[in-house]
Length: 397
Ligand SMILES: Cc1ncc(COP(=O)(O)O)c(C=O)c1O
Image 1: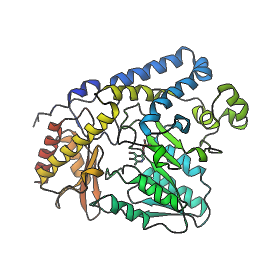
Image 2: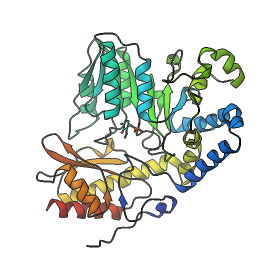
Image 3: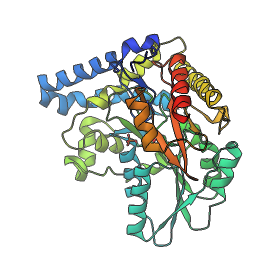
């Protein structure tokens, strides 16, 4: 049967999304707008025109341009930012810089991203440390419940915490700033995993003051894939090293005298020959998103949040289920647990994609239930969530 696919919003003209697919999963892999892709092409052309000039001279000010554009989005001084290829690398870099001892505990939640957890467990195992997971409730009653769940697992062996700003599977904006402050009072530093951070929810790293934070630009800021930031608080920058050491690692003073950059920037900005265009295009992505509607990136985040809540409510009404989390804890993603009797995750995901052409993540959740997570980005429309509601109602019988 040929179905009428609902139209996306007018902003879809700026993207190259497949028109035969209803794309409701910006949260896993964000689409990059055409003007931003064109900016990346120009950066790449510049490299190929004179690669020596690019890597020796031009790279440094262009990295600063992106850093300067990103700093206000995440609320910190550009001096405290470097780029890495993705949030997984950001988390791994911090973990490898920790000096853990046997018996130490790394505090996480049961909602942390799998790749980050894998790195956490590997680093902990090498040091004889353990990873302790706080159980976040689901359904999520409110920020206090999340805060209390994390703080209940603090012990006198807790050395460091790794906490998501917005959780991956449940799409919940955690009270990270409260957690960072309360842990800080007990002498425990936090790694803030803001993979869903820039362009997703408002951020103020200077005020929150985690020791380390990382987050993707290639999700909600719509940069090309392969661009994430790593923030290191000023008092933690001394001796903080990238995972890969490059030419200047043993003569940083001399090298930075030439590039006139802090050691922190110099080491991360060039860690071997690489495609730097995703980093350089972060400035262009921020410019695109700032200009796409009145009110800039703040307005985009507010519009995506409002569309997400509207979409969630449409689907909840269609299925007769209650929203599992308060609206105030959502950004542009919402997870819903489907009523008992829903098909298993794999079957439902395949049906939604093959039969209805809806791209949306579906997960098995504890208790044998099935959950879906919807995303809202500027190219999405209300009609797409109505269509999702119709599809789910049909598939759930
Ligand atoms: C909370 C969280 N952390 C880390 C990541 C990893 O991001 P990346 O694959 O870009 O490294 C994700 C990806 O979705 C995520 O949701």
